[in-house]
Length: 255
Image 1 (spheres, helix red, strand yellow):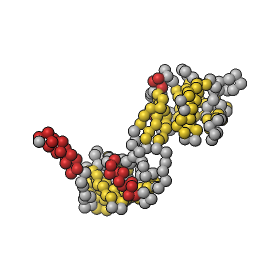
Image 2 (tube, rainbow, N blue to C red):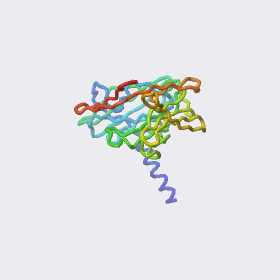
Image 3 (cartoon, rainbow, N blue to C red):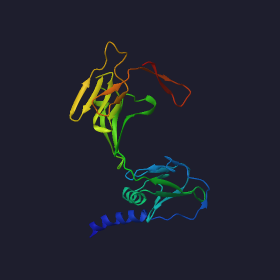
Image 4 (cartoon, rainbow, N blue to C red):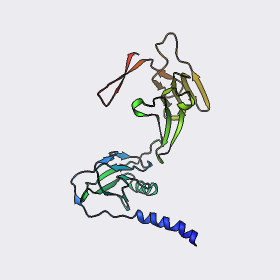
């Protein structure tokens, strides 16, 4: 019996901790300052929870999300609202083709209530994954990078290719044929230089530098059939600014 109670009590504590109501508050007369700014955006009906942070300094804060018969009120943890995945899915199902209204209250001395904002939920589906190159900002760790994919429904990330496997070289310009994950390419520079062409289970590495061209192949564009790829050739360079937050410019000497 004692062992059962050990499992049940934390579960009850979790359930009660998720049951909140918005406090009585003075109207702030303005939208909340949140990051990312999700006010008025349109999202697909299968996306992972859109957690957000209230950037205004406060002692305590709550957010109420409601649509149709579904309503969820959550308490901020250090200014961040973390939306439970199961409750978020119910909201999305209910709001498909409509919207989720979000109201935020914060204790900034006294309780204030911000103007509610809406997130619109589309009926059209989207691809479940997004692919990107990930590199540290500021160029401190330029030799630590990779190409990754993220599941938009769960927000889980996994590696497609990491340069720790290829002598920490540069890899770039990954490109898919008509969003087909089984047909893609990307370039590797410096160590192990070449273009990796992936077609299902077939992987081919190409040396695309010739005596007649100014560089190896650079920016790609697939033919919809997947049988051809057009490339540019470029002489690219970087220029760094000392006094601007956008510190780097990339330009071509020739192409």
